[in-house]
Image 1: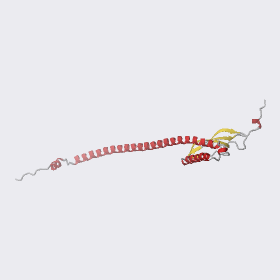
Image 2 (image 1 turned 180 degrees about the vertical axis):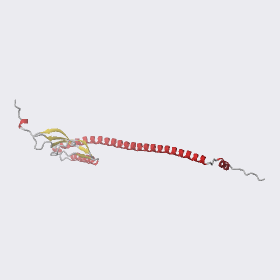
Image 3 (image 1 turned 90 degrees about the horizontal axis):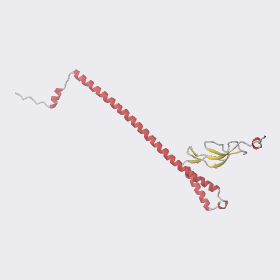
Image 4 (image 1 turned 135 degrees about the horizontal axis):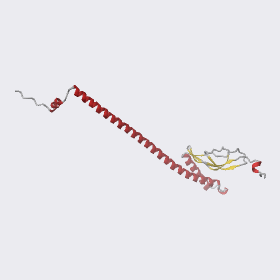
Length: 194
């Protein structure tokens, strides 16, 4: 008699599989439910990841903007201090005695002033126009005196007392100016009746 063949483990497992159509349909439905549930979880994780990524990008952008703003404020503060130095140079040059006007030492001081102006210009600092005859603009000028009885129209700049500066598109410091006031009339300059 022939000896029965030994069955392999794979054959034993294949024989244990239930191949009835109802069982296969139930297994397919179970796998579809599992796939649907897994896909829903995957979509939730993807949405959460996208939200986190967007929040992180916003955080990076805000941080970069804050850092740039802080550096800008620090630079602006330094520029304001340098402007005080430029004011000192202006006063020194305006008040120089005639006796040293041609002195080489004074030429050196004027050269330093020019270098300082060039440095400020390279950093985007521009002077605000406040020459006599310029119309007063409260966004760029600060009136510290009203001068009546000038030949200029009311509100026009008569004298620039201190230079004003703009850093790119922002006013760093308004120009201090004296503006023309209303012309004096007999009723405002004369004695008042009792």
